[in-house]
Amino acid sequence: MANLMVEGERVSLRPVTLADVGERYRGWLNDPDVNRYLETRFSVWTLDSIEGFVRSKRTADGEFLLAICLPAGGEHIGNLKIGPINPHHRYADLSLFIGEKQHWGRGLATEAIRLASGFAFGSLGLHKLEAGAYAANAASIRAFERCGYKREGLRRGHFMSDGRWTDMVLLGLLAENFDSGTEE
Image 1 (cartoon, rainbow, N blue to C red):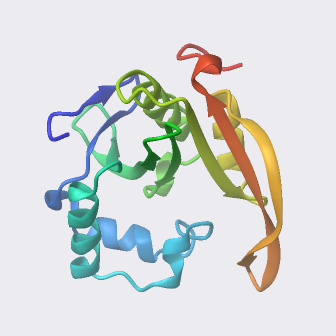
Image 2: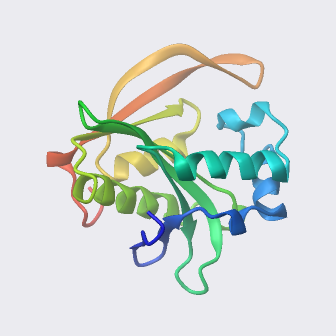
Image 3: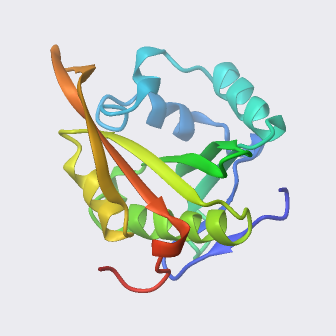
C-alpha cells in the first residue's frame, strides 16, 4: 500500500502517513464546520489520538485510509477511507471529508470518490461500494450521485444532529454500473 497513488486531473489519492499528522489535520477534525456530519465530532482530537488512528488504519487488513491531495505540490486537503472490506461478498464502505474549506464546492470530493471507486473496482476487485450520509448533507449526497451511486434506502431518525433526529441516506454503486468518465 505504501506505493499506492491514484492520480486524477484535480486531485490525487495516496496513503495517509504519520507525516500528515499535524496541527492542520487536528484542526480539521475539531472544526465544527468540517466535522458537522462526521462521527469524529464526538471526540476532541489530539495529535496523539490522530497518530494512533493513522497507525491503526495503516496496519488494518481490508482498510485504506487515503489522503486527498492537490496534484500541484501535493497539498493534503482531506481524507478518504475505503473499508472495511467484506472479502466474502466483495463490498466496502467509502467515506470522505474535505478539511480545507476553501476547496469546498469545487467538485474535488466528486473526483476523489470517482478515483477511489475506480481503484476499488479495478485494483481491489470489489463488487460494490456503499456510502451513508446525513440527509441534510446535500453536497455529499450530490457528490456520490454524480459518480453513479444510487439511493438505496433511508434509515429514519438514525443520527442526532443539531439537537434533532435526522435520517441517514444509504447510497451504493455496483462495479458493473461504474463509469470512470464524465458525470451522469
